[in-house]
Figure (spheres, rainbow, N blue to C red):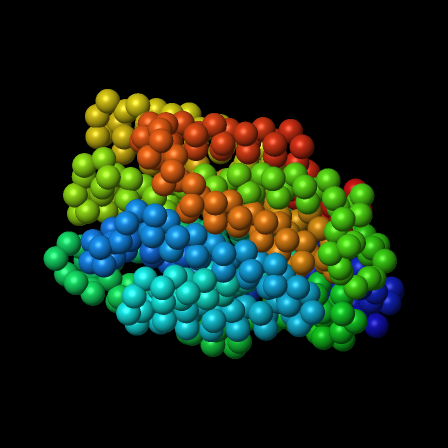
Amino acid sequence: MNTISGAASPLPDTGARVVARLDRLPVTRMQVFWVIVLGLAYFVETFDNSVFAYAAPTIRAEWGLPLESIGVITSAVFVGMMIGAIVGGRVSDRFGRKRLLIWSSVLYSLGSLMSALAPNYEILAVSRVITGIGVQAATGVIMVYLAEMFPRLSRGRFFSALTFIGLTAGPVTSLLALRLATEGEAGSWRWLFVLGAAGLLVAVLAAVALPESVRWLQSVGRHAAADAIVSKLEGRATAYTRRPLAEPVVIPDLPTAKGTYRELLSPIYLRRIGVATAGWFLFLFVVYGHLSWVATVLVETGMSQTEALGFVSVLSFSSFVSPVLLFPVADRLNRRTTIMIACVVAAVSFTVFSFAPSPIVMVVFAFVGQTMLAVGSAAFYTYIPEILPTHVRGIGAGLINGVGRVGGVLQGLVIAGIFALLGFQGLYLVLAATVLLVGLIIGLLGERTAKRALEEISQE
């Protein structure tokens, strides 16, 4: 028998009951501590993922690279991310969420050190592939872990808090780039990649501070370990609130199965995966088409490297605004509604940005557009792991992220061509139209997930 709030439970602890006990817990310092740890991991991953965009103009000038070579290196990290998403999802379903977070953090840190020491274009491209594998494996499992371990009524707000911590890497990266990757300082950009090796510290922190996912433990039959974690959390919650916990609402489990890609293609999941994958693919094309290229494109339109990096530095502070906007509505609006609103506003903003009559108008609407992309990203990261059951959540989220990363690969190869053919205004009109399409796809066809137990969503 299990003890809940000091009384013996009248029911045996089935997997469904243990998960229900987890889902009805109030927010305590323990969950706040976990989200800080996960946020720090997301911070370093975001830094590693975005650092090349800031260093690219300086690397290009120092090595005399053509624009197409910058596109190849930009795409290299997305090739790695595609691999990391698909393989990482499978590994997390088999070996656990915590173990994958630890070793993927080690991998992307080693990739970042390799980038710092790269003697030429080819080695840098390979190192970015390795970094991408580790970054996406870690990012994917963080999102799955948070979905599985945090209470359903506050899941969206915890994702907002995670995003706030992680996306502060944007302004930090841009400010460091202004200092370390400016004109006339040959090789100073390498220190940006050295800093990306901080993921080694994240690996140690995750190993010490985080328990394994209760839902994953249940899915692989480790019921005693899952019960022990939930019992500890219940004890902390009771001590914190000083009142009895609510009775858990048990939702029966889906039949236990070994998650396979074939199962994802069944009618139950195919539509959900198709909608999420299409939306995520196009969304990432826009996100990285903007983030990876805005500094380089501005330089090509006549700005100096320092001016372009200064412009991008201003935009990076949107990372502080987007979680503040999202937090109050994260668990009130459905994720699909949030994504749709963010995409529509981003489309309008990029359209105005492309025709802006002055630098001030450019900054304002680029800032709004980038803020909306950050809001949409946080909502997507909340939404994707919610739409699948535990036994296929890792490989399902990995598949969606992996195929979605093809959008990142394509933007690295395609954006240069669009810019050459259509110019600055044409490029941003294409990005605006694409993000508007994302909003329509998810807003009209997506699932309702806010404030619902993951098991309830799985069985709908």
